[in-house]
Length: 112
Length: 113
Image (cartoon, rainbow over all chains, first blue to last red; front, side):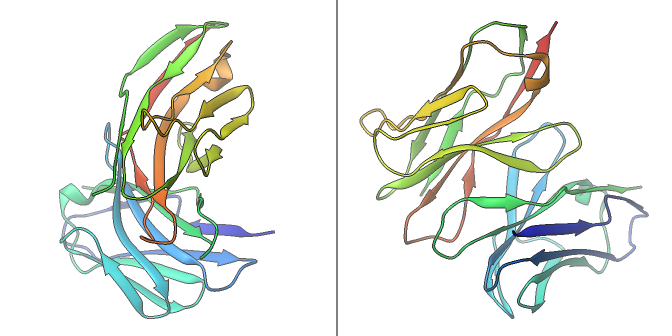
């Protein structure tokens, strides 16, 4: 069966510090991968998605970036965090031909 | 573009009450439709789905029917439990096209004993 791992679960970082969140998927190959952000009291905002190694589509201009160095690994990064980057970050994957997405447990990021 | 509009709440119900969460969509073509549930502090879990018109998705006592004529996918449960307290998201994905899953804003449900 397929599983998705996302870490860390919680993170407190000072303003201006770098960020690296990692997500890996097991039990499948060539998945579509996604990063979403959920701000307090708001819905889900798609940040990035990837259909293959090195292929990243950005949905919202911001100081975040994403990379996919391996088929089942998706990384969310920032060189300098802002207060507004605080939120709940969710990684997800989907099959290429099936339609639903499966989510990780999320990372609660607090920028102070 | 594709979009989902759903009740935002928050909504508070008593145990055993009837639940309806409205969801309507705008999409090109014939999307697949989903309901996801998010329990406190966790990621999203797929609750149910429907991939074509008139399909009914069901799981854990929840149901939703894909209504193409009204572009709706309302979630219902006849008798809610305290354990149903969560945030519920309606979502769509167009078939064979965009790789993206489009979500509504979510609705927080609290069920009191």
